[in-house]
Structure formats: structure tokens, C-alpha cells
Image (cartoon, rainbow, N blue to C red):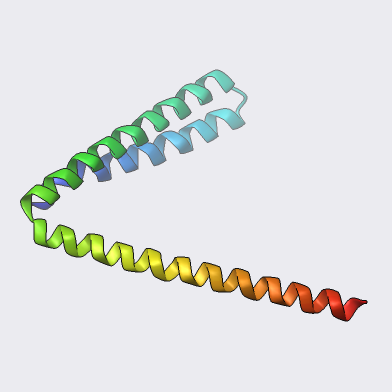
Length: 105
């Protein structure tokens, strides 16, 4: 797939950033209605980018299934790693909490 297919996501991301900044500027000047309208438009551009991203994922899955399964495998491994890391850090915090409570008695 060519890079031109991904260009609309960049445009929608830039539109989201610009509308969010504009909403902040207008909101600071006291025009709450225009600020809210701009934030709504920014949210709409983010939703549009998300929908287009789903379409791109489907196109990539159809176009190159081997690369897609490799990407899914990599994502699952990364999620498993961070899940295990999260559990280990939680257990460490629980042990440290027990030790400090006993030392404080």
C-alpha cells in the first residue's frame, strides 16, 4: 500500500490539533459557544480519523495477511509483557506497604 493512503489520517490529526487550539484561544477570550462548537468539530475529526483507521486496518489485513499476523503477534507479546510488569510492580508495592506498616508499629 502506498503512503498516500495514510495521508488523510495525518490531515485529520492536524485538523484536530488546530481545532482544539482554536477552541482554547476562543474559550480564553470568553466566547464559550464558539469554543464548544470548535471542540465538537475537533471531536468529530477524531472520530472520523478513528473510522478511517479501522478501514485501513481491514485493508492491510486483506492486502498483506502475513505482515498483519506478525503485527498482531508483536502487539500481543508487548501487551503480555506490560501486563506481567504491571502485576509484578503491584505485588512489589503491596509488599513495600506491608513492610512499612509493620515498621511503623
